[in-house]
Image (tube, rainbow, N blue to C red; front, side):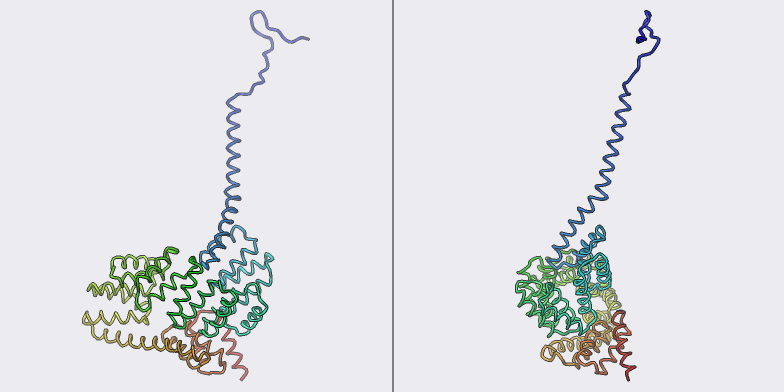
Amino acid sequence: MGLPTASPGGSSSVRPLNFQKPARSLTLLTLLVTVLCFVVIGGLGYWVVYPQVSAAHHWKQAKKDLKNNDLASAKRHLEYCSQVWPTDGEVHFLMARTCRRLSQFDRARAHLQLAAKQGWVIQQIKLENLLIKAQNVYLPETTKQLQELLKEGHQDDTFIFEALIIGCLETNNFFQANRWVTIWIEQHPDDWLARYWRGMILESAGEYELAVNEYQQALEMNPLGAGLHLRLAEMLARPNPTEEAMQHYEAALAADSNNTAALLGLARCQHSLGTKQATRATLDRLIELDPQNVPAYCLYGQVEQEEDQQEKALEWLQKAHALDPNHLVTNKNLSLVFNRLNRFEEAKEAERRSQELEKQLARLEEINRELLERPQDVGLRSEAGKILYTRGEYDKAFRWLVSAYLIDPQDKPTKEAMKKCLERMGNGELVERYKKMFEDESSAR
């Protein structure tokens, strides 16, 4: 049978088939598919590709910061990397090492466990655990193990030197710390960080002019070295702030605008140069960042005092005194303000207290100098610990007492003072270690 034909009137018994889809429907479907593809691709880019690219940038920046010893910044970058790459053993290991160098030992241990779980090199993990002990727990046997590694020419010798130096400074063993840094410089004469640590040792021992020379050499070796401008500024500002010191404070703030120590130093320089408006602005910024900053309140009190605003000065000084009754400059200024307000009994008491504090600080500086000649003198170390204990500075007192104990574990006055300090301290690791030691000695008798 043939195909149907049209009738003479133009109609057909069968309507012709229409194989063409509506153009509007096709366009809408194409648009929806295209949009969906872009959404999927965009989502993959945001949730998968972008974090990887960003983590790679943070990793590169962390390495750069570590080269310049900017540990706080490096830690922030590594934290991001550890979130994006949670199964990367190297990331966790580097995070652990950075936390340990920042004396954040609990976090360091946690990341070492994660690094071990991800199969990181067990020898490096063991070394980091030794370095934590060298910095924090004052174990002579740990020093011996690290010394053997140095004799073998360990590839991480600079990290070992640094941890040993920090441990020595924690126990005020300047002589031994200087021995380690001298070997470090001999083996790595171009390492700016070794010069930085020698400066820190000299500064701790009260040799400020010599410390300046070391910091300046370190800055010449690495102008981007973290902390160098601040340390140099602090030394140049002793005893009185200078324009040169202010330039270094400003350089430190250019690298970190929230550096509270640099802000305080800058405010002191501004005050010394007579720019009181700038001093106030800097102090306002500092107090906003650190509401517990005693020297900031004290300096604000001095500014008000110089402008004959004695009541306002008293308010600032009393805030400082409430936070730290042993702050020498606060007590001195309180004496002056009380006298000007005719509150003579209070002025007399503040003056008495300031004289007492001045004698204590002068004696501590004398002990530091005497120990350079007699580093094994138990009596000097124990005396420093007891002075700091009376000032309520229990952590510092304990370091001095431990240094005496390590020289002579049988010295009874030192051990008694250590027990008192332990009762006042919140360092659980030290409490457990030394309490157990004392308990063992008691049971042995």
